[in-house]
Each structure stands twice: as structure tokens, then as C-alpha cells.
Amino acid sequence: MSHRALLLVIEHGYRGTVEVGFSDLLYVCRGLHRQLGGADIVLRGSAVTFAVRAASVPPVRIGTGFAGAKPDPRGSLRELLDDGVRAWVDERDLRHLGFGADQVIEGVVPADTAELAVRWPDYRGVWFL
Amino acid sequence: MSRAVVPEWDLLITLTAPPFGSDVVTTVLRLLDATLRRGARVQVWACGYATSLTLRSLGEFKPADLANPRERHRSTAAVVTDLLGAHPDDFAWHVCRFCAEDRGALDHVDGVSTRSFSRFARRVESSATTVYIGGA
Image (cartoon, rainbow over all chains, first blue to last red; front, side, top):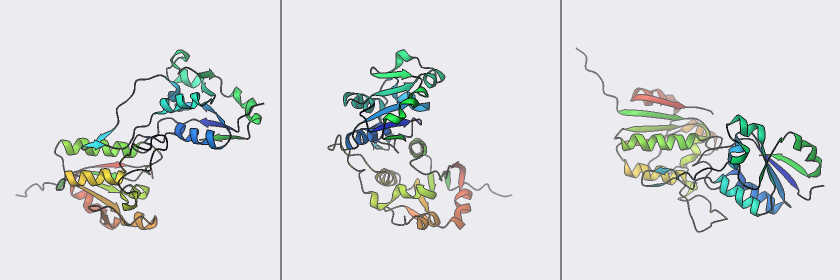
């Protein structure tokens, strides 16, 4: 039985830079985790890229200044892991996008996330973000 | 012998996609920045929920990042205001009046004009190239 309140499933990855700013979906997850009694995360579809190690990208410069903050989903994911959140990433979707399990951020568990459905009753809610 | 008419604008970007469903706003701002840097004359026509990008009520900055409250980030309205100031003769941002009225989004930052959709053809005719970024 899980002691977490929520299982948060994210299936849609990059959603823009200026649009998202610092408030990427994993930043939102941190708020849900802290406010609602704990959360775990499942990354599927293009959102598996949030769990893949990659170099930092520069912020978007428009005119003479920067157009808002840049999203940092990998940084947000690492902060969530530090907060005790458990995170799974879908192995098949990783492979489909050309990534291997060895490229995943430490602490995130590659898995068949469809099989994780057997754990859904352990949570008060399963939310698809 | 007729003389060729030189279009008033090099590029018209028509943006109808809503700002928070995908990366269209980033795309438009980067296209805008790149073309203005090359000396092009560019106008934007914002429809649908894209009319919210230049609302005066957005202020200069986005809401604070609770994890890093000392850092402030400019709003899209401020970014457009800066571009209008830097390119007063080469850049215009128009807002569709119908879409703006339909969303209660009529008060925009200085320099942004609201225009009737019935005159949209004039925007197209006055531009050498029109790029339509849809998704509304």
C-alpha cells in the first residue's frame, strides 16, 4: 500500500519555452506533492525526455533581453527526487524515441508503465497532467 | 506601363493558436526577432486567445517563481512593448477586435492596435509574405 496521495502521469513533453517559463509541469508537481500529501510520478510518451540526461539549453533571447525563464524539467525532476518523490519512466517510449535506460537521470526507474496500473488502487487519485 | 507596387510590409505573421497549448508563441517571437534583426518590416495579427499576450493587466513581469522569488521574468506584453520601442517604424502588433471583445481582452499595452477582422484582407494585401500559424 502506498502512503502517497497521488500518482501523477505526464504524457506530453515539451510545451513551449516562453509559454511555460519556470512553471514546467514538474514544477507544478512539486506543489501538488507538498500540498496534497505526497505524489509519485510516471513519465510516458514524449514526456520521457524529461528523464533523459541532456546538456542545458540557453534561454530565449528576444530583442535586447530574455523572454522569460526557460523551463528546466530535468532540474525540476531532480528536485522532486530530492523531495522523496518516486518516478518511473516508460521503457518502451524511451526506446521509441531512441534513448536507452542508461541515459536516464539517476533515481528514475525505467519500467513498463502500463503494468504500474496495478498500483493505481494504492493511491487516492491518479491524475493525468 | 504599370509600375510594380512595393508592399508596405515584408511579413505578416497571423497567430491564431492559443498561447499555452504548445510552443507557438516561442516560435512567433523567435521568427519576429530574427526577421526584425535582418531589417524586415513585420506585422503580427493576433486572433483567438493570442489576443491575451499583450494585455496591459499582465504588467511588466510574470508572477514570481515561488522557488526563486528574487528572479523576475518579463511578461509577453513587456517583450512586445520592448520590440515596439526598438522598431517603431518596422514592427506592428495588431489584435483582432472581435476575438478580444469575445474574451474581455480589450485593454492592451501602448502601441498595440485593435482592428476589425473585416479589414484583415488589407493586412494580407499590404504584406509581401503571410505566415499563418493556426491551431485555434
